[in-house]
Image 1 (cartoon, rainbow, N blue to C red):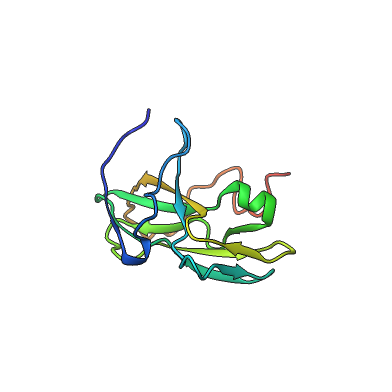
Image 2: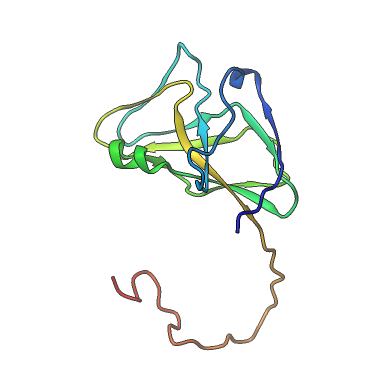
Length: 152
């Protein structure tokens, strides 16, 4: 079941004229975020380098929600460009500009131009946990196995 919520968004001066983030299909989970670099100053990511790309947007999510900034699969598959800290988290109380930390894992320079779709933003409910110190934990079949312990 899809749940619709409302969130206020503000376009900063360098984001004026760009489309707001949008879903690209009827059942898409993420809204595409656009690069708000200057029209006459595209950003070139050399292989192995990363940069914080502005979106020109601030967002006010309702309490109990977060937004995750995730890579776009096409950029990764075609150019080796992805989100370095994927997923990046935008908390409901954050009011600064949404930035996308892109890294070029490819073998060729990648140019980020104004209005290019650079990442996707997925909004999700958040569960908060109250941690309780325990002398021991319930055992499981898996135990402490991690990093490949369940097979390929």
